[in-house]
Length: 555
Image 1 (cartoon, rainbow, N blue to C red):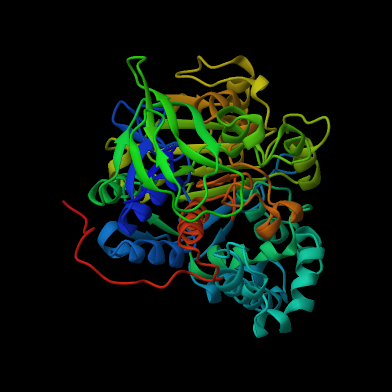
Image 2 (spheres, helix red, strand yellow):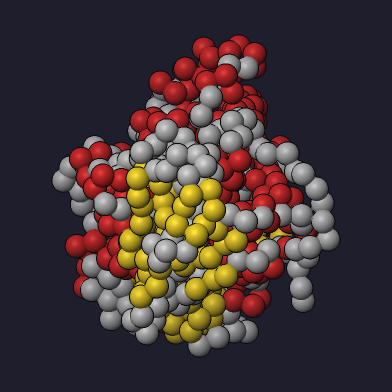
């Protein structure tokens, strides 16, 4: 039985632990915080329950496939609700203070085309072609790129890929913003199609047009919500991991990933404490191999967990620069200096008295000066955008369990530069002044643009999170909320991959590695680790080997 230690209990860590335990590994998971979930956290205050991370349930096929690998199904694990409308877009008032009519994005691709046509005559036909292309690109991505460990060139040399190379080259070479502008004129429609780049951690002007595939998800397939929020997903992943045999330790601070000179096949191995481990398994030609993980528990006692395999689901920058010796680093500090971070964020959780019919489950607030907004976040020097394009989630529109009766639950995300020096958040306005000022401006912006003049007076619970919190709680590189941006040079085979280049038996999972940011990508990264360990070089989703009766949701 392979002894495996997984570092980090976020979505990727839990998913990897569950898959490897299901594969037959003896798995121990170490999580530094008192709870698992990582960025997909939860906050409970006065009867309100807030998700403090992901809130858009997209790419349902990825979830379906992942659960099938564990012998269960999405239907058994989650109670999904399809949102109607999908979301609403509020635009910045003009110089006279006149509020534009919000654009409500309905459920169903035909209804979405009708909504576009009302805003820009002739755009329905363009949108159909755009979404057809997006669906095709999304399908190609799933079959040939997202699940591809990029360990064999022939996995890409498929007839369909080769036939599509000219179009793929065009999508990679064209910025998403330009790709959209060539097809649509109205600024709000351009923003609807460009904003998914933010969820990929990048500027639409820098993201490759390949990522127009995201529009096939929210405009074509629709948007779903798991009852209980993404914290329910975390709990299901934790339960599946434990059921598969994973031993989870919280309040476990990893201090070091231990390595040694790689031993040849057949050579007897011993633990650092002198216990016989048997003959060494076959390894690659890397000169180093993992031996285990040194960690500290909540009492301060230090432990060493012997391991044949180590998977770090922690932030890659932290893993490489803090947990490994210099000789074992695949990505040294100089490499990181050439990387582009995704945005930081101020998160604002609000409990509000009374109903807010003006806001559906998801809302987007777009500024008129789109370029200035992203220029402030990603420019050098960077600055706080004013006003900002923000995202608001009201899960109480769909889920009665997230707020007391007669109240609403709001989650507000304000993209800002990734910079821990901007400060931390806190409860009831006690965060650092700059963070609370950003939160105040966002509250006033929602109130003014959505015509909720008494919003501020109706707030009964308030909690903020800032870039310094991301850096402290998740060891996030530069305090970013997502990870490295999905620019061309940081996507697909150009992104940091899922196995160490220097150390045998060391793997990486999560948003900071391939295939990228977002919950579906974290689930895929877990499968990519599984593929690496299996020696599977295939490009698409792994075959589902069997269907068992384990993993059914309890209660």
